[in-house]
Amino acid sequence: MTIGKILKGNTVELLPLQKSHFAELEILASDKRIWEFYTLDGSQPPRFREAFDIALLEMERGTQFPFVIFHKESNKLIGSTRFLDIQLHNRKLEIGWTWLHPDYWATVVNPECKLLMLTHCFEELDLVRVQFKTDENNLRSRNAIEKVGGQFEGVLRNDMIRDNGTKRNSAYYSIIDSEWPVVKMKLKKQIINLGAG
Image 1 (spheres, rainbow, N blue to C red):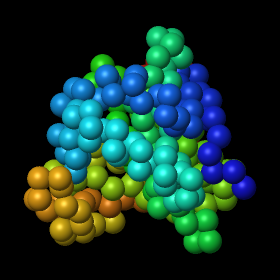
Image 2 (cartoon, rainbow, N blue to C red):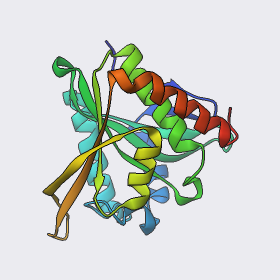
Image 3 (cartoon, one colour):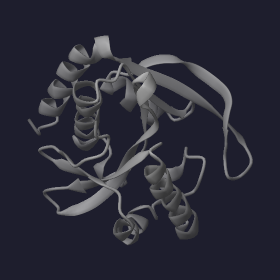
Image 4 (cartoon, rainbow, N blue to C red):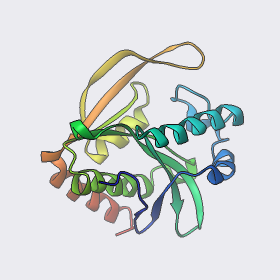
């Protein structure tokens, strides 16, 4: 069972994160709008590099698998996403740490990324649960998760501590295996409606 591999779509390819991607990602991440609801400010190069160094360490440990998002038409990286909290013995993981340059917000990119990742989870890894979480105040992210098919499960209070010391409440969502066929169909329709069918 292979968690990490290249996931190929019509618009994007998800490539395993490598240190050689850092410089290009760092330039993309300099837009502060991306980090408004994150616990860290990835627009600061030292903090960005620290977070992505940790991602590579977690990949070695098998607890995360980070991807870069390669946009095929423009032939460049446009963001990142990852599998987190990988628990194959419980047949579950989390999809998160998804960020895109704002030029690609509200486009086909996010639904296609989620279709690729969820197909891998449910049809290749045979998982029973995929979880998502976001800041409870991040309405754009919550709307995107709900559009993908995530079912709201509740808010965990004081779930995370931001770099600035404030507490974050997190809204939790999930998709389970029995829901996947309907979710897959809706995602494919969404992608077609966005003009990338």
